[in-house]
Amino acid sequence: MHDLVRLYAMEVAGRDVPADAREAALRRLVGFYLRGAYAAGRLLYPHRVDIEPAACGDGVVPPPMGTAGQALAWCDTEYVGVLAAFRLAAAHTWDDAAWRLAWALDAYCLRRAHLADLVEIWTVATRAVDRLGEPLPRAAARWRLGLSRAIFGERDGVLGLLRTAVALFARAGAAGCQAQVHQSIGLVMSRWKEHEPALHHARRALAMSRTLGNVNGEANALNSMAWCLSQLRRYDLALPHAERALWLFRGGDDPDGEAAALDSMGYIVHQMGRYREAIGYYTSAIRKRRMIGNVGQEPDSLVRIGDSYAALGESCHARAAWRRALALYRRQHRVSEAEQVQARFDGARPPWRPPRPSARHGPSRAAPPQHPVDRPDRAAGAHARARRHPRRVQGSEPYGVVRAGRPRVRARPPQPLPVAVRDHQIRLEAHGRAPGGQRLGETVVAAGREPGEPVHLAEHLGQHRAVASGEEADGRPRFEPGVPGVVAGLPGP
Image 1 (spheres, rainbow, N blue to C red):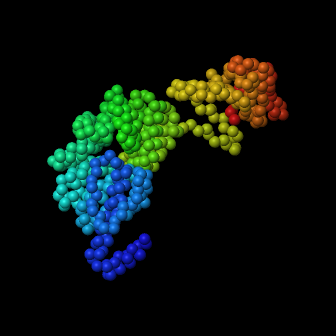
Image 2 (tube, one colour):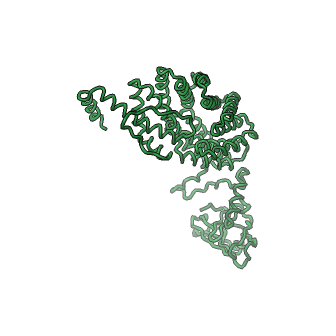
Image 3 (tube, helix red, strand yellow):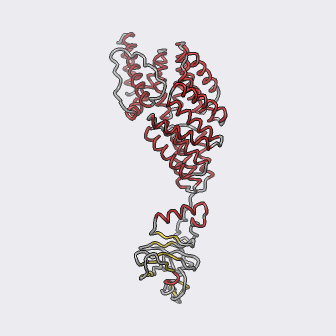
């Protein structure tokens, strides 16, 4: 609605509609959004502690939604309206509806990383529940306000809010909520690098969840313990906890928890030096988080998968993951995390790119990049690729590459390069330019050999005009037959 139309509607309603009718209509509007946000929150996070929605009045029909995808789509479309309804309820001191709207919006704001809005919502809702005076709403509001402020990057007063929430839940006899607050305290202290106290709170949450028979709470506590143990470099204990948590999350159909456990397992095996396995876990976690729309935690996994790629020397993949994470952090106004990713960019070695050819000086004669055989950290990957692609044979010399069918030969040192014949023949071409500037295109065909029988390039190239050794008087290239060796001293294509 246009602003002028909205102002006109407000003026007409204020002049022609009685006050009690206006209030009843506004309450129905707030009730509609409360019902919709409540139903969406239940679908987005079904394992969270539940509350009963407030009465919404006659004629309020909740929007139809049956899956988490439909709930997320409804929240994406109606988020501005729900936020306006919350502010309207707070302005009219409809405290019960205000704090229930805050509770219903909590799961969506965390999933979509509306962190600034979430801090504002729970700050207002805390004042509303204080006016109500009920113990459970007061405890829930302080729990979620402390957690949202910690995730947003604040520290002042966070632990005080969470400890007050634990005391209020204990006074009200809500042991399940108390266990979840202990887990939240562990999460906050782990973010602050206080891993021993965080592990203590995770253990308390695990003990209370097992006593209550809360399987989802047990899985969350196990995953928190795995993360704290990994930060303390006790990987032999951390990995079994994460695997158990993953098993419980999958049994309870909790994709959010499953993604968190996969991310923890990726971090643990990365620290154990199993980088390729870590990439597999991170890939599964990122795919799961994208499937459920969890953009709040997706950049964390992207940063860590970039670290695993960087440890393997695959800087292009690492920088691509970090670039995506940096964009998400900046979009979510998470300044400290964005600065850490930018520091990774500044410290990473950029991938090698050949220099551009100059029109003035002809093709570039810069040395080619170092071959994987000369790089010990990439030698294993090069041999694995050679086994996966049998028609591509890597030679023992760093500048020789032979391909069956239509191969290419680039070699600096004039030494024989053993290759295997495929399909009873191999065609070799020398590409580049002779000293006079003419293009080379000499072809050598080695036929009559059995497949797999070694052939030395020097043996066959020596029988043909394949080596440019100088210039004739008229500037044409001079080829000397019978010279053993591969094409020497010529740039690549």
